[in-house]
Image 1 (cartoon, rainbow, N blue to C red):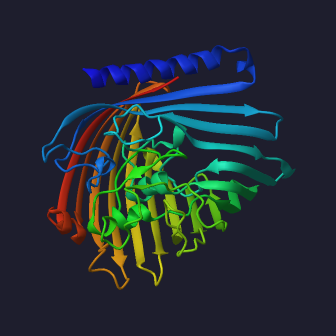
Image 2 (cartoon, helix red, strand yellow; image 1 turned 90 degrees about the vertical axis):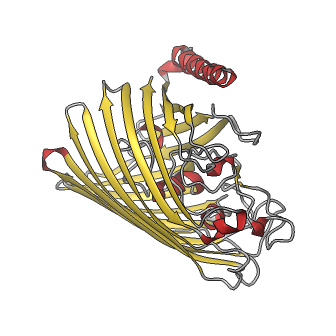
Length: 420
């Protein structure tokens, strides 16, 4: 009962804030939207990673038992304004209404916030510049408001990780060519504050979630031997703070996209250029590089096919005490008919530990997952969804904390999403 009262408290505060801002005198200059997602979940038995476990899904069980749980999974405020026809600002704030088992996660945090300049240089050529905090242009899956997906409740392994550990704090410039139904864009960015990226991939592995990490968030780690006193990394706290500047060295990415009425194709190369021997007393810098390719096909009869592939490598510590390669891919088939949408997705993921310390810090992992989702939209403001997710994974490090090497996790969720 106390838990539900807490949920109601945050939901009411959220609605009051959005109502106040929308009704305020400056509302003529601001556009304010809000999104709320209420969830019922039948969880797997294993403790979820957000509760210091090694579970692969956002929600896990308790004491080795499945749970039926009610959560307020997302509360987002979306604020935008235009200063001139070419200059604008965007911001997304999330309110965390979930219990955190005593963990000090921030209840109100910034997800994205940037200022943009988007002039037309020629009838076929536009310039886009933005600076602030934002997601890199990776996902073809997260198309809806507040970086959510119109296809499923839970994101793919790739975009779950992007939402958890990858964010740009810096500037991006793009040239966009439009002609004959084609749009081609080339983008480049210089950024900082993303040095611990890949900590979760090493010490937890891939996951399936729709939680978006706030700029000041601290994400918990399981008590694996390498992070305990006497382990390889006893100075690492039992949390990851992914959006932190450790080494004072900027990173970069370059990307391109080609969009037509029938397909979208994009690619990105990311390098945070982390100095892998640096440690700031709380977080290590990781030298993380990855590439991503995505393709979306818009087919007759409202069918869509999306495929995405990401592969990369990360190193950390003297003599590369952590040295890993990782990759993931998914294929998604979706069909919308009337107010209904059906989606089926298949994911494959893997981490290969290549360092000399694998006996003490084994980060190897392999697995796959199936996701089936049904969504019914009453209108643009209200939708309900149901999703079945099954993840099968192998991770040898699990044996070190008394768990079987293989995990089979099945989650069933229903969602009510409201947009104001």
